[in-house]
Image 1: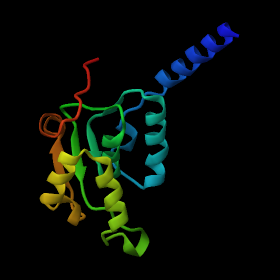
Image 2 (image 1 turned 60 degrees about the vertical axis):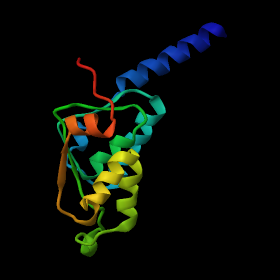
Image 3 (image 1 turned 180 degrees about the vertical axis):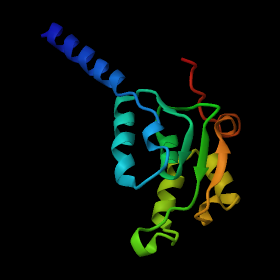
Length: 142
C-alpha cells in the first residue's frame, strides 16, 4: 500500500510539472470562461505560473495565481471590464471588480488611483515595474 501511495504521489507530481503553464496562449485576453480553468489548475497544482511577453486584459488575472512570477520583459495591459454584444463598449463593474480582486493591494490601489479601471483603453505597466514597485516575484532564469 505504501508503494502504491508513493507511486500515486509521484504520478500526480509528474502530471503537475507537465502542466506548468505560462501566459503565452492567453496573451490577447478574452472572456473569463477561457481563463478560469487555467487559473484553477495553476492554483491546484501550485506549480510556478509564468507571466511573460504581452499580457492584456483578462490575462492580468494570472497575477492572482498563488505561485505566479513575472518576467521583467513582460508588458501587462490593464483596462476596465466590459460587457458582451451590444454592451461590449460599456464598463461592467462586476468584471472590473473580478480583475481588481486578482491583484495585490498595492497594484490595485495604483491602477484605481490612476483611472486604469475606469476606461476601456489599455494602460500598460512593464513586468519590471510590476516586480520592483508592486511586489510580484520575478521569474527565475531558465
